[in-house]
Length: 368
Image 1 (tube, rainbow, N blue to C red):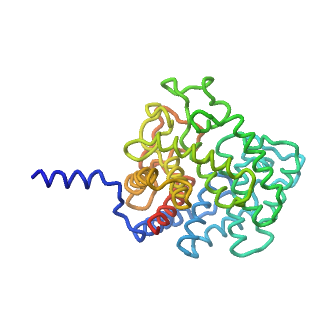
Image 2 (cartoon, one colour):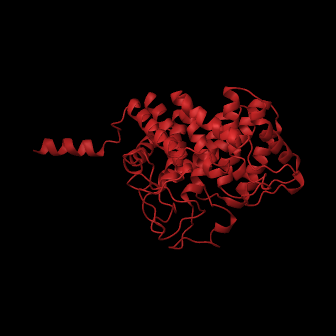
Image 3 (cartoon, rainbow, N blue to C red):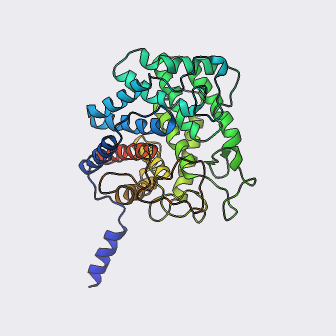
């Protein structure tokens, strides 16, 4: 009897996953199949839809399923391979805005990531012409405060490294760092290694429900995933590479420390009671960032594998619904909101994109 109890305890406490690579790939195809079959219209090029396509392209690179590439290609063509559409540079803005004149606002630039990926697969200058026009105009201005909110680091940092790889224009890397330094000056908390969503939320001016520093999970998820994408494309000899790695690794420690026992991260990272319960988009971005780091030798498998595996167990076992819907995604917003309902029916394109990113890295992790 004692031996039976000990055996059960070992099974219960083991961090190992029951899922195989084949099972993870089946999850990717189930999730993406559900999304694409229920979202048949291309949608605009703004961040919420464009973030899905960053995950869809990762799923394409992993599976080689042409329908995934075609889905993003159709979306890109529908949007004329542009973000915001204004042609008058004198009116271009970079504060928050959903109209065509907010060309320099990063939420309208994340679409360039997918356009560049599609260009690399089948080169055609029209695919990156607008990206080049917008980013090179932006870099010609004296401003460095373009990334004033945490989300912007995911939206645009990878655009800079991707464009550098195509053009060889060193200015993309110089401005990447210049804008990153500005973002850190207003949002980065050196003590914790985490990012406030923007300057409005810096402690002690703003506090969580229980008087703590209020770090929004999805906001930090954007940054963590964005750093992984930057490190993936950044030249090995880039003079600021060590700094990006330092920020990424310190963030990984903070992410590990704030994970809940059930595997997810709450919407306010350091105050779980502020908005309790599971949330998928932040959790998926963290899972992606951790697994990418393990898979690419930046994070210790011994230290971080159990964290990522526990997070994946939540994503594949709780967030994923039987029909392929990804649930528990906090709606569009910028903070953890006490009392906001987030349940199995709460889904959004950016949450699905984040889930696909995490799933692809889990497949690669199991492949190792």
